[in-house]
Amino acid sequence: VKLRRVYVAPESGNVGDLITMETPINIIVEYINLITDVHLHSVLHIVNDQGIIAFTTGAGIELDPLLHVNPPKGLFRSIYHIPGNFLNSGSYRVNIFLIRGTFGTTFVLYDGLKFEVVDNSERQFAWYGREPGVLCPQLHWTTEYLGNHINE
Image (tube, rainbow, N blue to C red):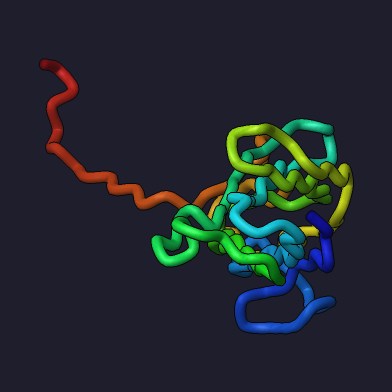
């Protein structure tokens, strides 16, 4: 196996464009399978600026039934979609693992990619600093008034 290229870009932009907390991004891993009939898949560890693994994710050719039977030699591209409003602001490093079947890791590249997520969002509340935590998803919340039942 041979790693060809790794890069990050906004889903609707180009490499080098600003990545904000709201920006959906793609991490693209291109690798070459040099051996026929070998099942390969790539795994990413997304590590924040405090050295904490924020999350891991993986993709493999075994997900495609046509490639599962007789995996060919050649170039493969895995595209990892990270939604907007998921990562907190800060610096991130990506560790890349290429895995051969169930035999284990064939290739590892620590800090193979680095990128920055910028917080430039407007806030409706009093807090304007960096939120604590690795992830900062924008979850759906509801608050409803249930009446004046203070003395119950």
